[in-house]
Image (tube, rainbow over all chains, first blue to last red; front, side, top):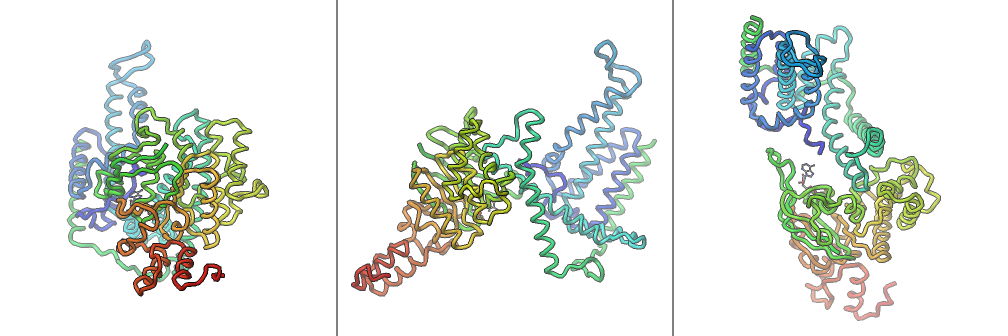
Length: 267
Length: 288
Ligand SMILES: Nc1ncnc2c1ncn2[C@@H]1O[C@H](COP(=O)(O)OP(=O)(O)OP(=O)(O)O)[C@@H](O)[C@H]1O
Ligand SMILES: [Mg+2]
């Protein structure tokens, strides 16, 4: 059931994209997302789509698998599109209910752009999580944010918290699945009923889930202490991040995309 | 009145590179009133199999029949199925959530839409069956000991009034005494109510004494199926798949090979002791 949510999960395989330095992927994703907000015409989106297609192709993650993860935001996407479609002022194309509700040319344009932007945004960021293990990701983040230490930001601790949080997502999903099944076996019904009933039906799920989350957090803290974890001070890395030649090439491609995309997309 | 599995297969994460065949063409019949032990090492597919029996998982291939009806047929009343086929999960105490033990046990029958008195009657009865007296009724389930929690959770399923009770490793993580107590309670339950029971375990020792029939699973297939003594006769094969027959079996076989006139098929300690005494030509009463 819940295992179908692929958003934010890692997809195990070996590809050029998987092997890239996490810093490249982090920076690349960030710049890619920013670039999406610069586009003012269709060509920008075409270039972004081409760039994404190249990344997806190189990553060897099946497109179906990526799209499956998008289902989680389908609702959000529909609402956004609907709002833009109906509420943008401009030249009306069709109108219903005596002109109270109308679709304008500008509305369609905006709705399409926003939908594309949202999709690209989600696909782009899931490409990062699909191809980078949570550990790698936080390693990269820690290294990129290191300058913030000058301002007394506990970079290592934040990175560690993030990696634990990411690690816990699949565990908690699995746990939810298990508890849900156990309660269904006791006749619980999570699918039907009115809103209030449904909210009430969540209690037998949430209480055990919270208890289990606390128990796991407690166990983890103990296990970390037992291995003498004491924060980032003087901690060495088993696999230090070092840029390779492929990372340079990746940066180059990214640069090319940005120049082409923003250059043409803002014409 | 029975459970029948016909060529049931299940594949996890079908269609991804992580696809894994957890059940592989399982054919099986469990008649009414039988006490069956389901054994297999970690990852052999036991938990996956039992979840098919009450419709929590849907077979990728094949059919599951309860009382002759296909449970995956459209329109089949799954809720009714789940009240007749009770499933106690691994670590069932993790699903307790109510403020006190009694209300938690009431959760199942309440979901069946029974009147309040009936719900409470069933809850009380279920708690009695697992040996939790009224003094625990008002306690928080989280304040009980591990074994008591487990029993409260089992009562939660029993209160649904199932005709078939499936227990997934009910003794995992309990001390030997807690283990013994739970198993004896289950046996008593079966004798008292005539319920069909499927007990999942990876310890032969646990089930040998209590069950009528043992199913051994390996890599998603049923490898051996028969009365305990028949299954233990294959103790060499069991070892190959990482399981072991009860220690008694080894001792009896060793004695037999050394030329003692004992029945090597004895499965319980009592039987074995009797056999040895007999072979030594002494009367059984000497045992104590
Ligand atoms: N949710 C899941 N997703 C993917 N694979 C799974 C999942 N659950 C189980 N599996 C796989 O299916 C196989 C059978 O698992 P199952 O839980 O049925 O084993 P089991 O016999 O109950 O083991 P145990 O004695 O450890 O409880 C295992 O190889 C396991 O890796
Ligand atoms: Mg199991």
